[in-house]
Length: 276
Ligand code: ACO
Image: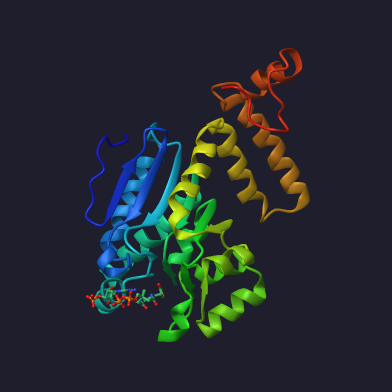
């Protein structure tokens, strides 16, 4: 059952009236580094937000001047080095929210990268369907700088989201790059001046919130799923997915839009959404 109130120690949940909900990593004094508590909080929040009817689009961002400074080196790593049970629990929650729950979230998700994004922070960045960055945000695969590899599933994610030369370059040099460069590489959809980041991200979120939610969900699930399939598997999967959408679309979008275009001449599918 969804919660009415979301109160957490390390994150903030804010609901806008138009269906846009914010999940804000909220340890600005630690540049939103991910502690075990933050992993537990995010894991729980995403579980409830997934079925919360108020939530049409989720924006993930960080408080203060960071998106996320990666795993908390003190609390995630050193404090648990000799505590296998705690380390295991933190690792489970860490993977669960940043990948399992976020990449399968049933509504559209946008990462709004407002500042530093390092190491493990790339997992939730790439798990989101879309990403918008401030031009001057700072990205880095900093693992090599302190003696570890981009583990978890960071390496797997970056070779999927970046071209292999860029992924290798930034992984073995540890060099930083800006939001503008992230956009050029296709790691984020686009970047904007920091002063416009919130407004531009909201504009995108509201566009998605206005669309048929079942169609958005089935589309994003389809785009993700076909990547690992052969052409024959994809064709079969997409045919079944299309049928499933017609069955599960509570507002019957396909039939309604055929009527609006063919009979009523009320809208043009090529140029925008049907009237809902
Ligand atoms: N883990 C633990 N604490 C952190 C982390 C982190 N990843 N990042 C920042 N902090 C803490 C600092 O220790 C400091 O705490 P303190 O005030 O108690 O001393 C506070 O956040 C502010 O950090 P500063 O370094 O003073 O802030 P500044 O703005 O100068 O630099 C930056 C920010 C560049 C993010 C720097 O803190 C940094 O390099 N952090 C580590 C980034 C990183 O490599 N993360 C790990 C990636 S690998 C992985 O995730 C598996």
